[in-house]
Image (cartoon, rainbow, N blue to C red; front, side, top):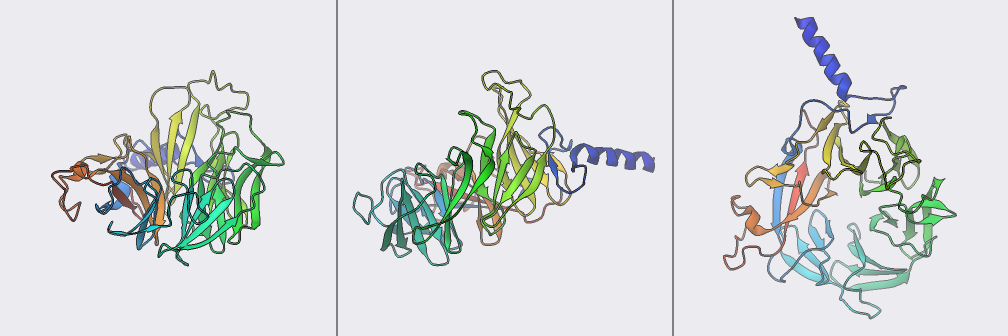
Length: 377
């Protein structure tokens, strides 16, 4: 009897744990996972709700950047700075067309936490900088290797500012442009291109992940669904990190996007934390919604997350139909989403200053979902 149980256990692991033939890189697949479904709450440590105070009435927060001490938002009101509890501190810079002002819309912002500087990029080549005290510091022109380059994300790493684009729409010498790094004086420091020629228009096979990994060295994940390999792209090098399994879910270069087989899938997101990979999969030719997988880096086992994606059972709070981002604050991994105060009314002390009965929705509420550093499933 014990031998039969042990054999069953081995077979179960073989269905959900995959490595390449050389046993060097983990192999990922949307079709091979454990029969045990996992709840999102199983990998969550704590959930914190932070409502922005009513000093300024907000319709939204725009892009959000969090540090251990501060929260920065980019609503139409401008760049707003709050403390970690959601108390308004000040506006960073001002909106306008002047040399020290930034646009109301269509700009990107990032924070140099060490030097307490806020950087604002306005296409095609203007970089503004402000102090955490809100004072204007500088306005410079940046140098890009591609004239028409409109990055989706920018991040500060040491003395460089990195610009990323979520899909490889831009090229240098017909090679896909991964990222561009400039010095803080605006001069071009380095950039990285792929070895592959630019993809055909409308091609969904080439994607960037739009998140940092858990590493602190500007490491990004890059994958091309035509290619077997998923790469870690660092400022200093690019190296293979994971492999896609062969299978009918894979896109072929001969596929027509107007008539794709039902089996074709696209991995739209990979979040890499210390403990696991969080993967979002969608069927490219079906109207059915996608699903999420969790790959345990320690055991090599893949699990399917329950479709409800509930992160707080006290009020049935879910990520199923809401957007979310990944970020690191200090040494910890977080998922970041947004909600309204009336949605958390039944959670004791979720909003420290209470809910205004005359304004049940109130200002936006940030939800910081801290993920476990280690998971045992």
